[in-house]
Image 1 (cartoon, rainbow, N blue to C red):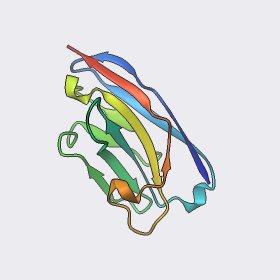
Image 2: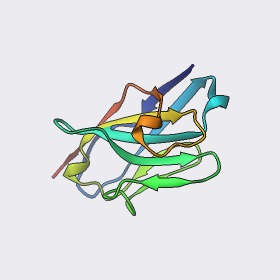
Image 3: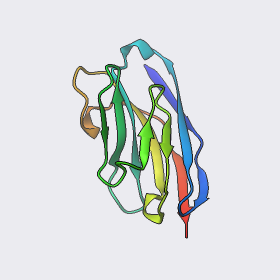
Image 4: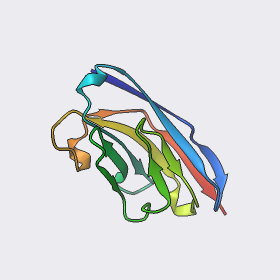
Length: 117
């Protein structure tokens, strides 16, 4: 079992940057891929960024070029927009193939990011 705890959320202005961190504990040796998803009010949860242990990365379309994910799963968000406002969730996948939200079995409680104009 893996426990994930997010940190770093908050309120920022349009164009500013913010970093989110995720602390993992428990059976972390079972994790093959970690990443971030987000859910805005009234919308479905969507991919933000994922990174596998062998370096594969994938980003949501609107995040590509603005968001970056490091080896320790820190999410660096730049040039933030109001539409980036959401609850951001850290997630871990324990499978050999992790490309979709449904493949991620471990989830944090989420951290709120609010972008104001």
